[in-house]
Image (cartoon, rainbow, N blue to C red; front, side, top):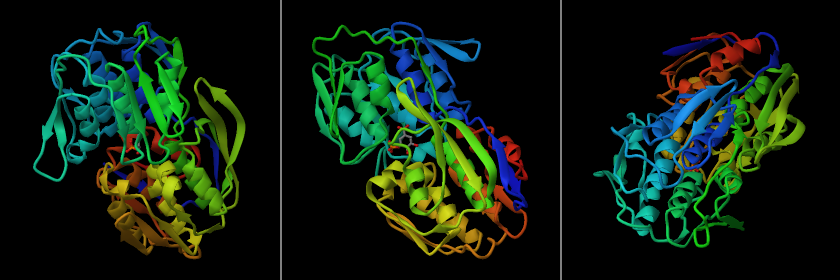
Amino acid sequence: MKMIVEPAVRPLAGTVAIPGDKSIGHRALLFSLLSGTPVRVRGLGDGADNGRSAKAITALGASISRDGDAFVITGTGLDGLRAPAAPIDCGNSGTTIRLLCGLLAGQKFATTLFGDDSLSKRPMRRVIEPLAQMGASIAGAGGGEDVTPPLVVGPATGPLRAIAYASPMASAQVKTAVLLAGLYADGATSVTEPGPSRDHSERMLAYLGAPLAVQGRTTTIDTRAWNRDLAGSGFDVPADPSSAAFLVAAALVAGAGEVRLPNVCVNPTRTGFLDAIAAMGGRVALEHPRTGGPEPIADLVVRGPAASLRGTEITGDLAVRSIDELPILAVLAARAHGTTTVRDAEELRVKESDRIATTCAMLRAFGVACEARPDGFVVEGRPDRPFLHARVHADGDHRIAMAAVIGGLVADGASQVEDTDNVATSYPGFIAAMRTLGASVRG
Ligand code: S3P
């Protein structure tokens, strides 16, 4: 599939309801499987990745029904999971497969997990290593530098061993996999991270009554003196800041009468892109800040002419807190005066595509200079001339595809973005949302 985008001829304007946060949606589904009471989940996103987690939990014994605007998930409780009848297809979803590794590591049955071509290349050793230390059996395809799907997880022959894991990377997927396995371990399982990663799991597991404690960068699940009950009445999934980032960027580069994105998750572990935009001189208002269940939320609002931006540096914790938004931040950097440098983001190499290579290739197609580095990239902004209209290949990566569409808004003619099917993994309504704001985009 492809998308065609015309240059924006007037400022964007409108209100768009962004779909539910993908990270929180995965957790709402997977953790509800472990709940002993039905959980009502409102605001779940309609992306294919969350759909993979939904199918996975039904294969493991949960049932999902619709009740008005909510899904009611009836789980099996911690110890009632059923062996799936067939291998579980995780599609394009790294979060589904890595979190399932942790959840399934302590089960008494074996499960095979597989995915699409992109997922079949993604590194799994990062979760297998700590889980193996806990005594779990996980086998994968090897051969290359890392272990890749398909994976066979389990069976466990007894309780897992509690470990204190010093994670070499700030990764919410690794942290969550170990904590989920910790629910099936015989003591206190802890994960210590070198920097802050998104903390949705901690918030949600605590809400469900898991024996969880956070101290600094260490999160612990201690199953001693616990009745093995997880229960919660429901979650509201707030709108996804990673999807909102594309519309925020569109409003900044094209100008905005008023672009309003209600109810967005503004958990500080996810708002690195807003901090980067502020450092570049862009203005995004957070209106009506409030709390929605375990997560802070606000309406994101952009107003005013096309932003006058300046280059910045995105490194360290800020790179982790904006990791999924770096492709769209690169488009903003290309509209900024001066140079923007992204460092400490080697993780981009192993996302849905090699996002250092694909981000640079996308910007170069628009005539922007972008130099790839081992752990990031350097963008030379060209704010005073339009981008060259381009044909961009998205390499099957949803975030590269959407970033390229936003780039096309400031090009000197119509641009074509190819290989865009996977936009549906996170944001099936992306084209409709862009049109609501007045952009000319078609599929
Ligand atoms: C995610 C964590 C991040 C992020 C990914 C979703 C999650 O990956 O990039 O898109 O939902 O836990 P890491 O676990 O590698 O940090």
